[in-house]
Length: 191
Picture 1 (cartoon, helix red, strand yellow):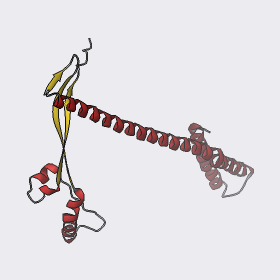
Picture 2: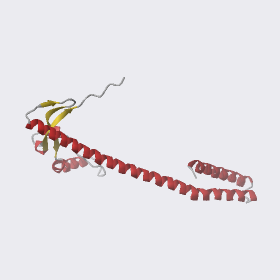
Picture 3: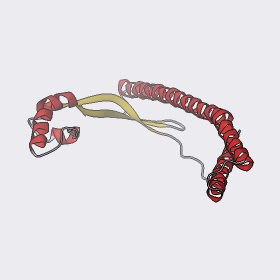
Picture 4: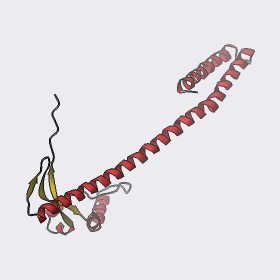
């Protein structure tokens, strides 16, 4: 059964039930050949829906869940591939930067590509140390101010903001990587 057939069967069952109820009201609840036939028809529709209908929907549901799992796996594989490519790009840039430094060149312009020495900085902070230092204090203050226990408290900041505070600047880590900047040919204009 497809969804249109299932919808049609549900509509038939609803019409049959309403018609059956009207007949029972008109004849004072007496069971007749007509009511028995309608009861049998409703039972047949119910059986069809709870066997073929449910199985059809179950197969459809399973196929959609399988499709979702497949897409998640493909996405995870693509994410891993992108991460691998990013690492390769970083490696190539470090090697070009090394060549520039060791040959004493600040900038090298080739036929199509231009490279310039660059010190790439990545600034991070120790979020665990920050939590250990302040999270309990902040949580206690929030609870005392009436925050219910079912709501958690989290600390949010940035390495830049932490660097501005002398006491917390020790939580900030600055990693410098010798690399290069990269200029590539412009795309051709479309006419």
